[in-house]
Amino acid sequence: MKITKHNYEIFFIDYFDGNLNESREKELFNFLDKNPLLKEEFECFDNGENVKLIPDSKVFAKKSMLKHNTFVDVQEISEIDYLMISDLEKDIKPEQKTQLDNLLASNPKCFNEYNLFGKTKLEYDSKIEFKYKNRIKRTLLPMGTIRTTLSIAAAATAFLLIINQLNFNDSLNEGNNGRNISLRNTNSKMALFSQSQNDNNSLNTSNKYTFKQATHKINNTINNSVSEQDSLNATNHSNYQEIKVPVKHERILISGTENINSLKIKNTEKKLLQPEDKSFISNVNLWAIAETGVKTWNAVTNSDASLNNKYNEKGGIEKLSFSYKGIKFSKSFNKNK
Amino acid sequence: MTVQEYNTSVNSFSDNVYRFILKSVKDKDKAKDITQDSYEKLWINRLSVDREKVKSYLFSTAYHTMIDMIRREKKFANYETVFEEPSYESENCDLQEILHSAIQKLPEDQKAVILLRDYEDYSYKEISDITKLSEAQVKTYIYRARIFLKHYIGKLENVI
Image (tube, rainbow over all chains, first blue to last red; front, side, top):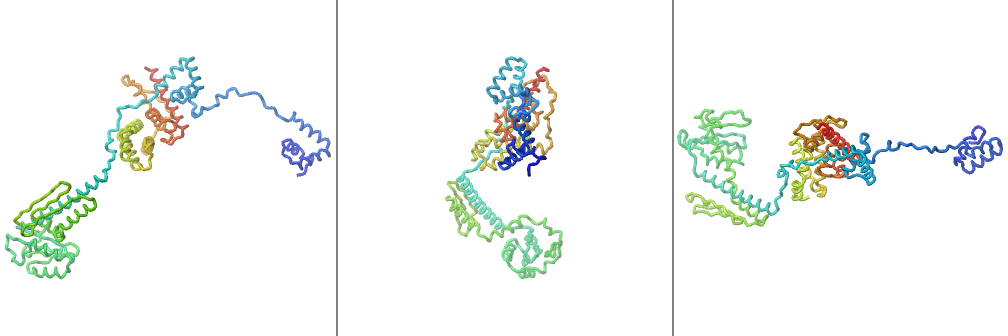
């Protein structure tokens, strides 16, 4: 922008503000040499007395009214309250403490207020206790204790399993009298009810289907084909009649001399059903399982549990014993069996 | 944090946490639940919690659980500008009882910070860490609470 009579004021102000570079300043002075009247005006600017404002020396007397406390930005807290609370909170500066002391000394009303603030300190009620500490406490057993506990538990489980199995064998030897009904489901989706009445000879000998036979049959047929089932059905065919029941893909054969109501499941003696289920277990050598279990635990836990048995002349178990770290269990069985 | 240290913290701080919450919510069952929750969270995070800061962790957890519960139940009431006339009975003039009834009239934030300050003697910084409020806010709340309590017991003294 070139300096003209229309814009020279801008250049004057920029010059006095120090915003003109050297070439512009030279340009300005050349312009003033060509315009003497404007040069007089420029010199008036240069004196500065007429155009510069001198700062007023007056001060605002109520600065303290506008000030805020360091942290507390609360209009309702007066300076006196602030000092008192600061003292109570042990958050007071030395000069503030002096100011507060002077106030308290000179004004009894302030002293009462100060005392009131002192009373606002809460004290906890020591009667209030949490009564459920034991509920939230935790206990962890040492590793050695866990191993010992697990060893004993495993050995005891094996022991009880064997005892239970032996009791089951005892119950088999006792035989079954009375009206026995067995039920089984086979792979061919057939349900067979067979009735045996030892005390009632309404059925001939070939039709007696005792619990032992049933057990044996189940064991043999568990993996066999349907044809074996059919042969069994054929054997007793003359005494059974086939009926349809509302069970999907199932047939029931019942004795021709009995009506359907007498063969309801509710009439089945529970005692007979239990051994039949357990008979599946009889095929497995529980003794071997128990021995293996104890040996495994001995190896894993480095313990010395032992499981021993004693056979009688007939080959039956006469006595069974289990020992672990000085603890011994034993059970004797009827020698006649 | 070991099991033993955890159990020690139960013995040392459970009363304090329970007391703090009970005074805030005025409900024993809720105070019990919140205390149990806090310890449950401590147990879950026991590996990451610095054992030097267990107490702060418990108070912080309890405080935030309590605030969440209050907000959930929409019982949060703002008494910030309410200066009710104190009620008193002749047999209930024990100063601490009066104060404890007075703090129930404080807003939740003020109540919590004043309880932490007076009961547990926590610094502004510690209360700030527990409540996640700024130090300035903590100090402001404490000062406001003091003013309110002074006003409350001052009126009672005048009446008596």
